[in-house]
Image (cartoon, rainbow, N blue to C red; front, side, top):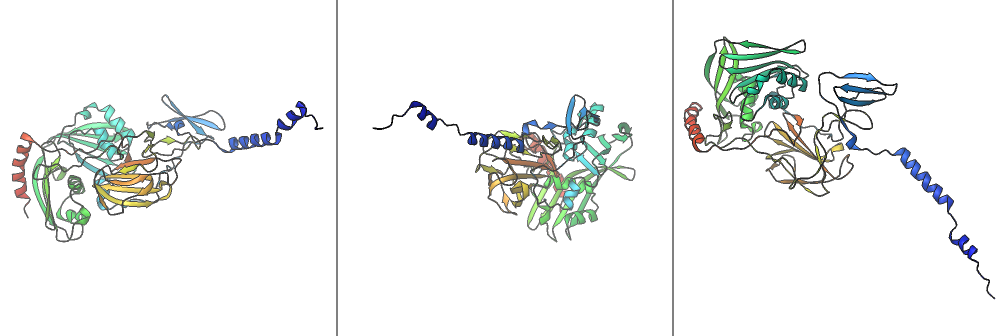
Length: 451
């Protein structure tokens, strides 16, 4: 006769508690919690770029930087140290002597105001110290009244601190702002200015910069010419025997050159001619009135995507307490999303490059550079010419990346700027009466540009 099974026996066999499994799970959870701390980028803090910050020590291990209403925690009593961001490629983009002139690396820049310019935006493009820009523009409100065609010039030290700023209001009225003991002092210079129309011609024998200087052009004048034709002419491809002709108006204070204005320039590159003629709006056009500027897409994608991390050159790392600049914008897109070139240009880098992963850099003209990082696949090669809207790669998760996304950067004059808010060139054509006035001007200028 079979043994009768008691309900208590059944419960013992089927509901025995596996204590060793529970302890094992608890041990793993505790170990994981101790060793892993989530990197929450939403906890990053913006460190304001104001002239002075006061450091107050709270205890032995923590202190804070107090700046107005802002407070930023400092870890272990140490101030934030600027470090590289996690989106730094190993490969640097090569520069040349023209880059140095355009960037104002000789610490002296001359600029002609065009439509849409503000002094704040102009100086930021040339990497002038933000605190100096703020002090100058807030103290002297009249600097908001810059007009098309007026010229400004400035000098900086090697650390981009503004030393002097000059605003030519008219041919005999110049405002000068000079920094002394940390403050800007305004003065006026009213002197008889003698304008001179100058025609300079030269041949390419070695390089444009060297030959232009030999012909009598200044660094500022070379920079103006380069910016005017940067979208049409590749100055690196000028050949021995090519020619250039320039028409300028120079304003002389005694024997000193005060300002230069480029009225027109012509390059003969092989069998092709390239012109830049100054319009009444302060912009340059070819001899048919077509714009020499190039427009840009604001986004390198077919559709707008969520920004997962914005541009912040003073981003404070939430764990280390160090400043880790984020010099671009991260778009949250899935792996394999097509990435587009935001403008016409030349691919200068297309390769795997350190923490940037699969990385593309495109040079647009002489002042603009865009970079695209963490790509899954690269679809272009170095030296390749691309058009605005061309598919150059597929987004991915390569390099030092916590998930699929596209890191996109825009550099103006070799300085990273916010691509979502930066002032970008606009390609506009002359029409109607404006075009007729311009074409009549071309006749007088082009005759002086003959070789």
